[in-house]
Amino acid sequence: MITTESVNGAPNWLDLATPDLDASVSFYGGVFGWRFRPGGAETGGYGMFTLDGKKVAGAMTVTADQGTPGWTVYFRAADADAAVKAAEQAGATVFLQPMDVLDQGRMAILADPAGGAFGLWQPRQHKGFEHVTQDGGLNWVELHTSDAPAAKEFYATVLGWGTFDVEFPGGSYTTVSPAGTDENGMFGGIAPLDTEPGEAQPDTHWTPYIHVPDVDAAAATAQKLGGTVRSAPAGVAGVGRIATLTDPHGGAFAVIKGDPNQT
Image 1 (tube, rainbow, N blue to C red):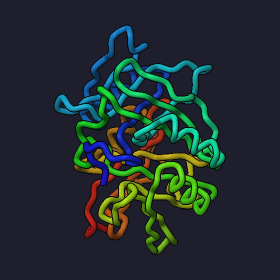
Image 2: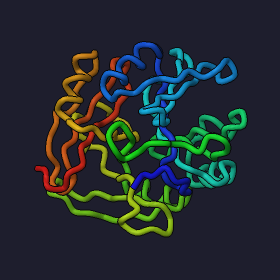
Image 3: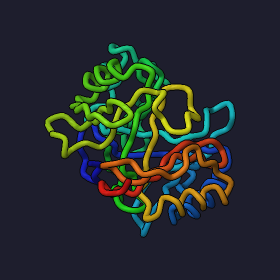
Image 4: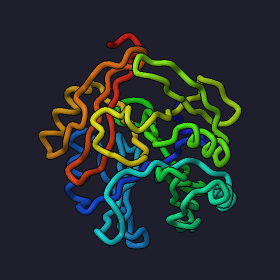
């Protein structure tokens, strides 16, 4: 599971690139109850979403020439430089070479061979999440990819993930977990691209799932605030209830209420 502990290879941060920070703060505040803590001038406008004072994600303004709006999932690297080198050797594209972020940590942005973009975060002062799993926190991450077998091999090589294949009515699903753990450590999954509800994103991509107390209410609120419901709330046997959404600027995410007995 996703935890606030610093575990190599596991998700340890999430941030949003948006063309309108104020609008995004209003949107996510309405959907999740998040507040925004702006950074100082030295952060270049980067700030933190918080829930009850605990850090849940980051956000910053991007212009059209700086990048595409959306969420980036970061995975913990004990040595970001070594991880990027391993990723390059395994066929990754590096968008941002490892760089220090003040005294907070060291980061890199890259994409797996199929084009799934993700980040690496080597923590220093900023360890990562302070609230996860429960309402308002990151609960799951999911890679929809054009080549699931290759993705399993790539992330095992770069981040040391273990994988477990699970059969669902719709087909096979691969869960992933940090090195040295079993199924109880799983924090995400890998699925073929054509199995994503809504199919709003045709390319390989990572989707963050945020836990909410009421999936239907969260989807309705997102739509009311200018977002889009990509797939309507639905129960998934053995998992819970989920919906996939986009914010008003195209940032894709999902909401989930975990309940294995819900169908």
